[in-house]
Image (cartoon, rainbow, N blue to C red):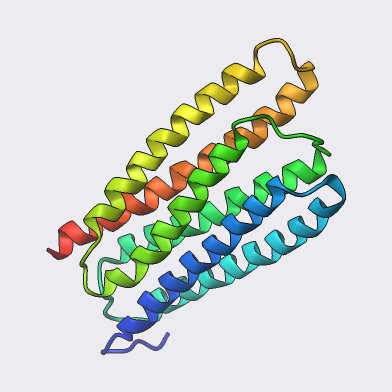
Amino acid sequence: MRFRLTPRETSFYDMFAASADNIVTGSKLLMELLGADSSARAEIAERMRAAEHAGDDATHAIFHQLNSSFITPFDREDIYSLASSLDDIMDFMEEAVDLVVLYQIVELPKGVDQQIEVLARAAELTAEAMPNLRTMTNLTEYWIEVNRLENQADQIHRKLLAHLFNGKYDAMDVLKLKQIVDVLEEAADAFEHVANTVETIAVKES
């Protein structure tokens, strides 16, 4: 394997920014899903699948760059963790959309829109933060706000579960809907993992 003595540091920053921008695309598709009828959801799922594949490509590019660089802008394990967590977010969002289509969900329960709004805001904040890794500035507000959003997502998730188990839903529908809201909650957790990794990197580099 060929190693470079001088790191192409800008490529890491650019690739992290591209991954985060792709997550914003995914969050917009989630928002679009909310207002779509059943006939339009399959097409949205196809676009989400394409975005997820683009996310995979971005993650593989980061790993390839990591494996072929002798010097990196910050610790290798943090680069790996950040790339993996960004990829997880996209995976969870794509899974949620796919489940809605596969289970032929006619109407999503009240509260899912709040989950998706939280994810959309976290996506915007993450995309705004990634370029700041280059200078390690203006990041504190980002990870504080994402952690606050994750706490909000937890509360929404618990209320959704209580709603699903109130006896008004068929047992099979409960299983299907619970899986969807659980996956959306996992996406919120993954945003927090990204923010925590960014905090770790900033602390090490300070």
